[in-house]
Image 1 (cartoon, rainbow, N blue to C red):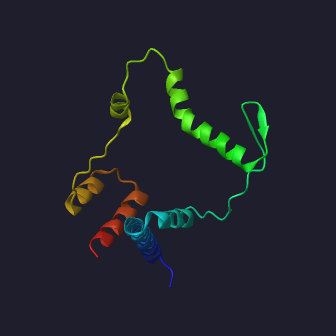
Image 2: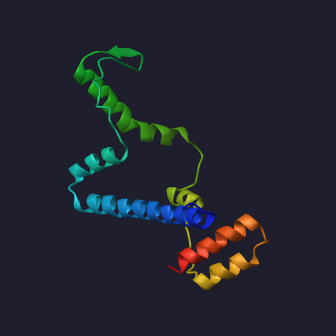
Image 3: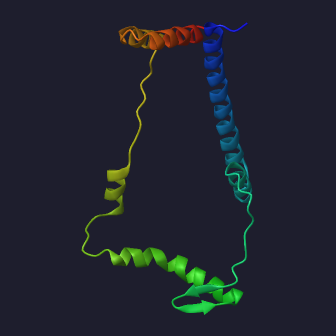
Length: 147
């Protein structure tokens, strides 16, 4: 039998179940990665990213104006590129006295969480404007918290 109370209760419980499923999946995969061999981690990562494509062979590569066709030449060009890109980018920045540590301090953000109680939540809800939808949802939320 449909009624607004049951529908709202169902939605809240569905949200709760979905959050729990996500939480358990995070725990499962974190545990799997922490206990697996490093080689197995790629299997987990590919599964999580839903990666379905397989690697394709590179049969032709143009590097420094030269077109390469041989696998060994392509491998050497890719190796040269990826081993030298960091120093090349670093050398392109001149006249800087900034350090990586200073940069990290500027971009590093942290989160701070404070513990809250059900009483805190109730007080916040009571202080909200008397919006009918908000008040109705808050009542169902309080009912759900008390389960």
